[in-house]
Image 1 (tube, helix red, strand yellow):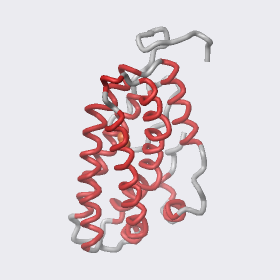
Image 2 (image 1 turned 60 degrees about the horizontal axis):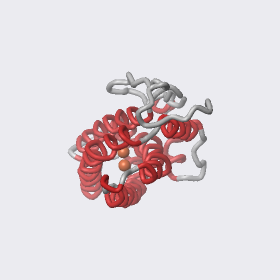
Image 3 (image 1 turned 180 degrees about the horizontal axis):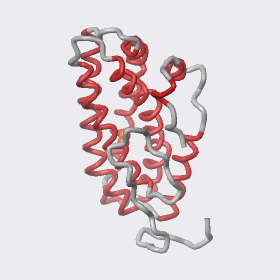
Image 4 (image 1 turned 45 degrees about the vertical axis):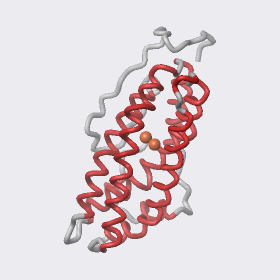
Length: 214
Ligand SMILES: [Fe+2]
Ligand SMILES: [Fe+2]
């Protein structure tokens, strides 16, 4: 990293966009990539999973492949995304936002929603592991999947409409480099082997999770 001071309008460091499209596999983040655009693309990915959670909620028979994809998302991709925002994006934005941005209340609300989401998916992990083995989703888990999909969609709308546009305006190039560096390091770190998620992922066939880590 050079010692050159970069400001929000500094174009010396060209941030590239992303080209992962519909993303059959999770992204491999590049150091030169703009983290804000990577977060935006992750939101696209999360919207797809909302649709898949609703599909599983409507299933009247076993849908093991669908359950596996959702399990991988809830256990690996979504936690990384929540950490990207809570430990990276939100603190940077709190530092850079102007008083007129009135962002503090929105960021606090989004952080609370993250807690609710994490609690909801922790409850769903064992049920999804059973569905990944061929169990039919019981009514209470269908309802939980529907609720999670609905609340996630609302959350993504607020982040796309308010948080990411302000991040594009306020974060400096130095901020963006630091944020992307954190995001890459987070994905390179091994998961906690004692967690429910690590145990659930370990039971999945290798092709479900293979080739998805940077
Ligand atoms: Fe997000
Ligand atoms: Fe979020």
